[in-house]
Amino acid sequence: MRFLLRAALLFLPLSACNSDQVEHLSNTKELAVEAENWQVKRIMPKDLLRATGWAGDSLTRTAERELRQVLAAKLQEGGVAAALPFCRPAALPATDSLANVLQASLGWMSPRPRNPAHRAALTPADLNAADTTTRRVARPATEQFTYQRPVVLNDALCLRCHGKVGQDIATADYALIQQQYPQDQATGYQLGQSMGVWRASFKRSGVAELYTMKTRKVMKKRKPLF
Image (cartoon, rainbow, N blue to C red):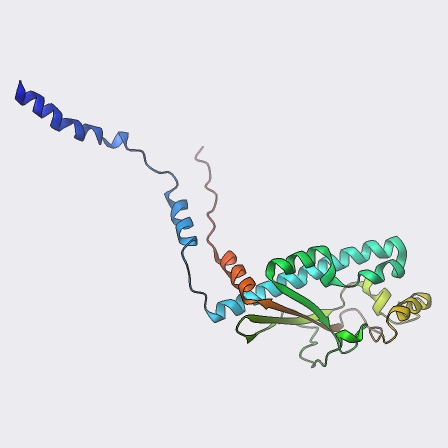
């Protein structure tokens, strides 16, 4: 009897580990990806320059899109007089919000600016309207990155303030422009012509955070079995 009891006690642990009773984790792949995402990874200088290109593209495209939308609405609402105060893309809400997230400052420079504060000596290569995808990224300081690409007049609405006076720009409208910008030089442009360049400056921490987010692995949704 004692022998049978001892045998029964020895058998209990084995039966408790029956494979049918083990609870398997169904999301082990997701857990592995998440664990890898949280590992501290070294970001190389070339990675930061690459991320600067991403950040600059995102910021300037947001600025261009928002500017078109706002100016179209304002021109329809009250003409050049209503639109003129809003031709400052860096100050528009969506653009300003994204700049804060990216820890960036955005500017628009031109050899023929409307505001003299935006004047810059630019080379033909800087103003190459045929290649707006060419970006110039640099790291002038340890904690600073810069981005530049051409600004091209590609919307006919912009001609109402930057086209030819008396043809695209009404004389009365240009009088309003000159009241605010007596030294204006930003007229006489045609569609497809480069007006200047976007210039953005980014802090290292903002660029590094963007690189981390862009390179983080994302699990694909599994298709249902049935």
